[in-house]
Image (tube, rainbow, N blue to C red; front, side, top):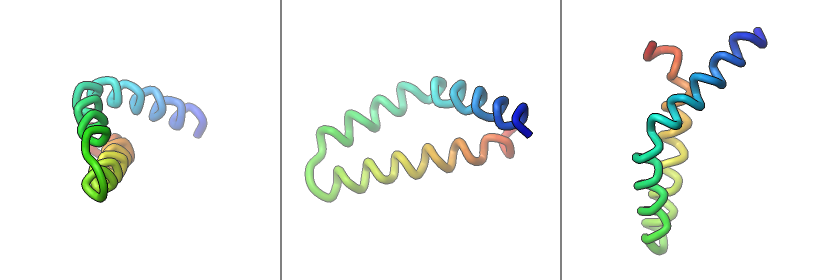
Length: 60
């Protein structure tokens, strides 16, 4: 159980690093926007990253 969770954690870090330039762009977009557009962009970024990492096992 712990080995499987550890492997998922390592794979999640690798996937996040592979997406680094996309995430940098989305963070810059979030920081440059104002008001509700900033909130929506930030929330969409976090939700999308979460879904991407949760479905990591299905995409392999």
